[in-house]
Image (cartoon, rainbow over all chains, first blue to last red; front, side):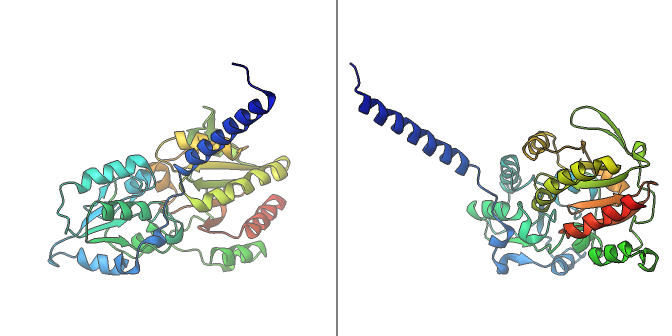
Length: 163
Length: 162
């Protein structure tokens, strides 16, 4: 079957159009990570409040997940916290799901990062959403205004090094 | 506060700025040897005689992405005057770093950092952190977090005049 010139033009335009749509979809499958500012204020925890919870004899300790970079975790992290991978990356989300799986949905979980100022942290928002979507009802995000060094370590709160 | 410290420094009043106990300012830049992304050995001590902007960054750090193109422009602008940028990525793996270096067309060496290098520089627990190192190898200024890039450029110019 032979196509007329106008039919060929229509087919060409359709192919280009479909390519553009496919390209746009591919781009939107890798959107910017959710900002930490998406965490409701009621689910944010101040460093002083967490430090109090970590004191011996205070009661049940929360489960602590560091959802940032491993290099930072090795340099300093909150004692007894687990590195669950960057919340902004797919492998981090898989690891977080794995760490959270055995926990009760009512367990108090505190996630923290501190790689960057709160409004620029790419890890807290996705990790919070993931835990929320998994049905955890008591998830708090440690509010680190500037970075983990200034807002936790320099304040003299407990810190561990290594893995 | 860092910007204020810098402004005083640029005005030649550095001695009047009390560095914090943990600050590396006015101390020799801790030495390190690392391979860059192209496999070339980068020895920080070999930069003695040059003004070095040592930038600790990561691909996940939004603030860093704003600074890096500026640093590439400065490398081009001041390179002939003895200015070099050395970037240390604190990413966990090098794959995203290679991609970012290509995308941002970085024209200076990028090496991979780790916890040991972070500890050498007093613990890098938040990015970006950038050190301005003078020709004699001492750290002249430290810039943490969101920085006034105009102020940083003035500090570089002052260091190049020394």
